[in-house]
Length: 197
Image (cartoon, rainbow, N blue to C red; front, side):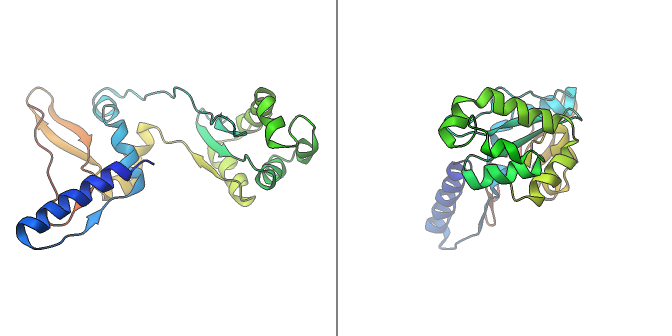
């Protein structure tokens, strides 16, 4: 589970400090920050060079549909609709209720066997909409889905800034480098970002 290691590390650090000083502290870690820490090398690459990393695989074996789908505005949305009730809601969101009764997609095993055809149908639907439009239709039908953030989205998201997840540190050649913030956040021993050189 993303975040488990960072939270456990934060808890261990807090316990060490409590053993040393006799005082406890708050361990503040958001799940997205822990997952974001896996993207650490992409932060300075985007900040300095504008490089947006690309996806390298997305489906979840034995659970279909559960994949990333391109939208008409060159973005991606992740949709997870592997059980029967959610799959029917996905079909309703797509205005394709007949897909729920199609023998190729009628149950989980059939959907997995025919995942290429199913992904093509869903991708055609998402590809005809913007990310915002697809996400709104899925939310309105209670289909688990989430937009996929690019590094540009992260830099534009006020929550990342509010949580100090994008830190500028001095760098002798470039002047400053943006780095991923510190996770977890500890109230008494918060840590700090050091210059890169």
